Amino acid sequence: MLFDSANYYLFLFALFIIYYLLPNKFRWILLLLGSISFYIIGGLNTFWVPILIILNTYACGILIEKNANNKFKSSYFAIGLTVNLGLLFFYKYINFFIANTMNIFNYFNSILNAPNTYIQPLKLQFIVPLGISYVTFQAIGYLIEINRGNQYPEKNIAMFSTYILFFPKLFSGPIERAHNFLPQLKLQHEFNYTNVISGFKRILWGLFVKLVIANRLALYTDPMFNDQVNHSGITLLIASFLFMFQLFADFSAYTDIAIGSAQIFGYKLMENFKQPFLAKSVTEMWRKWHISLTNWLNEYVYTPTVITLRYWNKIAIVFALMFTFFIVGFWHGASWNYIILGLLQGFIISIEFFTKKIRKNIRNKIPVWLNNILGISFTLCYFCFSCIFFKSHGASDAFLIIKKILSFSGPIYNENPSILISSFIGVLLLMAVQIKKEYYDDKISFFDNHNMLIRYFSYSVIIVAILLFGIFETREFIYIQF
Image 1 (tube, rainbow, N blue to C red):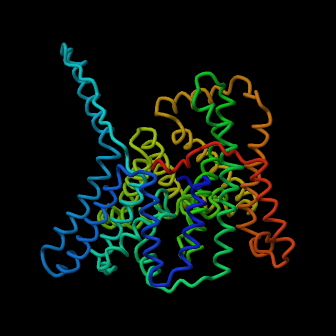
Image 2: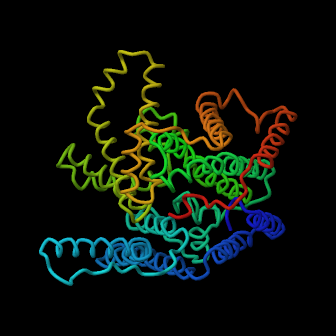
Image 3: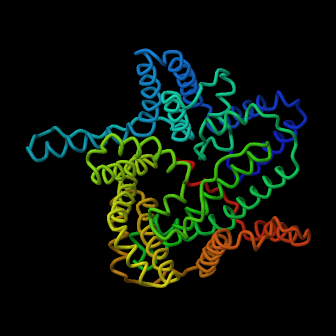
């Protein structure tokens, strides 16, 4: 049940009506039942996986607290992490490790000229549970906080299950922290007109960005990346540039719909983006992009690694950065192109760390506006380059695309000029919205304008644009696969 499907909005509206008809004390239970139904509709065969993660995390959380002052605390913590990470590893990474182990074995056999020893890589056939990365990271974060003494375990397993399974964030986040979400389950959620309207406006905007911008950009980028051999370097360069904006539009649209869906029930999810394409460095961009993931990794991977290796001084920081962004890449998928994507981010952020003083001296010698333009331009170019590895079907495809781009040869694919024109209009609109939010949010308002005519005119324009220009053919949200 995708966020851009009619079925989702029938489900959401029915749940919304029943929710506010029920007495307050039963409303969170309805959300749990709705979330279970939401998951079962999407993946009944793998529903046992999040259930096992919930049971394991719930039990280990309580046992960690009960044994806080004895040697068994670390054992229960280790069991909790091992089970959760084991499930994630098996479903998401086992085939990657089998294939690479077999490839290494076959490579050495070929060097040794061993006859009849080639092993055909085995691929296990199974369905990957939806949202397993998000569910697992939330569960692991919860256990870490209990182990550190920062979080009391939730004694009500149904409430804990609602935290893990809450349907707006279930498949693609945000990766919500227990200390932010669990207390909300215990509040009285009365009908709040302002909250409900704000939530529906957020959903409307998310639908517009997904259907009108992201899906329209996909009309150009998908054919180019699916057949990179038969397209020119210039065409692939344009496709890479447009995909960067498609990725943002697609993922931010999902987040908008998720946050809006939670808001109409009175729940607040964390923001996942903060104008990333106005960042003046790659370091700054990662503070503004997929914020829930980067915050999680900063707190549970980067910072502990730096502290553990603190005697290494700056080497510790570089190692921690590379290790953290290796996990960023690997979290996205079991493929070398994703690993390279992550390492590219770690590499450039390490360079930015070591050149901090040099760059500051340069900034002091040039006008602010020029510094901003240069910083934003470099960040966009580097991220555009990185996105080639994100979109490609494998590392070899990515290197072929880069090779063709560097040749800068051939004509621009222009079989349907309207697709290319509408794609660039979408890019300009995305940038205009980010500039408005960053610099003029208090000065310019459409959806929240005090003038009722402007507000309703804005709603009408968005709805008409969706109906006239929306691409309604089924296009799965990109981050659903992670």
